[in-house]
Image (cartoon, rainbow, N blue to C red; front, side, top):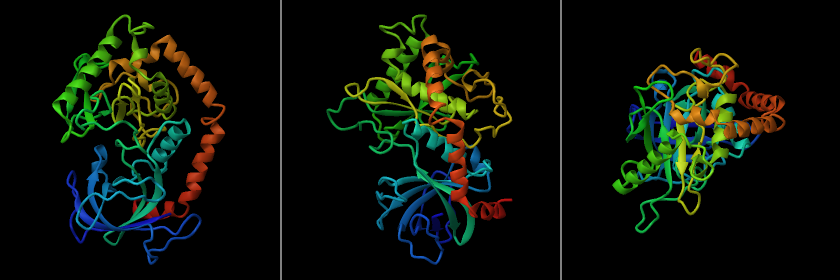
Length: 370
């Protein structure tokens, strides 16, 4: 595996504010061994680094947000481990996931379905001289021609209709509340976050546009004629992306699906006026790795689960899932994919390949984290 060596010069890595550090990546190419004494041919330079995560913040093995920088501290777009050039990266720490591979496997499945998910590479981390185990170096979800490929906003005279990247998650980032209660709790409303444009650059006009667009979208879905062929959800929703999002969430039995780390995006009207679901994100407690909301069982659907905590699903996920047109598309797509990308043998091959790739690093990781 590639070896990532980070040195903070004894500075403490904190949450939400990046500190400057040095990073080296030792990678000698496919099927070649890497040693910490080898030259850092893949990357040898500056980064900004911070702790990232929500519930994972309490884990002793920390995940990090990484920003590649030049000597002046400015963003530096670089290609790392075969991924397209960018400056924002994630160094994800598998900890609650003892297989180490759940996120990588889910993203690989999504990409096999033709739906972009973050590119990933397993690696081993040495932080300030200490071995920290197996990590996943991966792309951060953001607007980019090689990531979420939507139009940029903000230029004078630019069409305000797109693009926008939104997220359903906790309420610790700027956004707005839906006018409608959640699917299972009439006292709770969904909070939509602005991801792109980011809050420090998004204008009031842009906020008003995407909020009004989503309100109109939800008004239609709340109506009795939500599935009208002329003015119903088909005008506003990319059904194929919605179906694939359902398939990946249900195949993996993701108890966080539809309510946490749930992304959606809208491009400019002249490119595509519909809302798309994705990219998928955060599967560390999917694939049976949860003992709540029936995550440990293989039957039933997460999209129709009765959610009892504060992180709720929008009403329209379950309503659309029960619609005959969408459920038929869901069923047909499932049956086709089960003979190809989602065949049991195909998924088992993914798993076996990842285990072979990790190799002896698995034992080193669990010697570090018992």
